[in-house]
Image 1: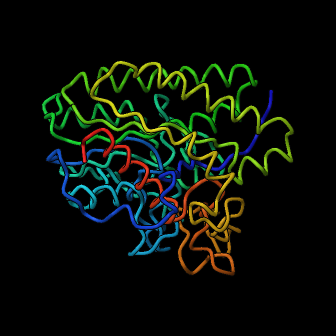
Image 2: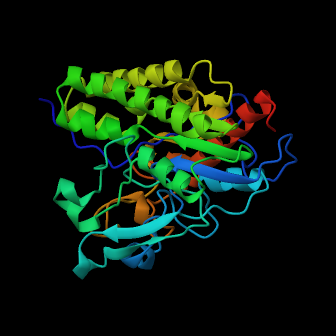
Length: 353
């Protein structure tokens, strides 16, 4: 059995091909569809502050990027682009070590519709950072509520349906990759990723569009084998890079196949764009796609060794604002801007913008 240590959650930054990286994803525009609200499901890439409590908040963290009041993740940029209010976390809290400020009671925010949580998987409730995994995970105690349950909670709050005029964003699967590749034999890990992709498609079909949603954006997984995390693991475990790519493509294939024919879903291909982005970074305004902007040496200067508590005070030296990665898998604010640009362009092609 192959055991590989991966960082908590997938990085899925992508860029609008040919736009050269210029311009933000958050400038409000007039939309062809008048959306009533924004709803998001997924993992750390869409987490607007589930864990911005206790010690994490005291350290200036809460989002998986370079944290500062001015820096936004892609969901926040999309909200501004679509004329929606800033998204807020539907649930906050931590279930970790009380003596270290990581035991914070769970609070529900019924008027907030950003359900994504760092560490969340598609179906399994135990993802990276969850206390049931033990070790450092038990110290932090991320909630890792899976996507299927996130959707159920939204339905429970809204009479079991979507109104039909919301815009819904879905991005998940990375944590399934990290857990599966670390705990399963290669063939089993690939099979498990295919299952996760099919399950996510099923939830979109039955629990989202099947419950009335008409404007659903599903972003697939980029080529995670190109991340700094995958590069480091390839040195320790030769062959893991190719395995990672196979797991990603298997997930994406099952996700796309499962969504085929669903007229209410816009499938955004971040995988293909991420590969070109890695091969031609300068075309996208990127100065570095191999290193990370944050100094994640723990416990100092980064208490958790993660972009969750990365701030402008613990960056690596030099100019890092156009780096792709904040830590070994998560995007910088610029990376999030590029993802927002990609999604905006695809929504425009579909006629939703």
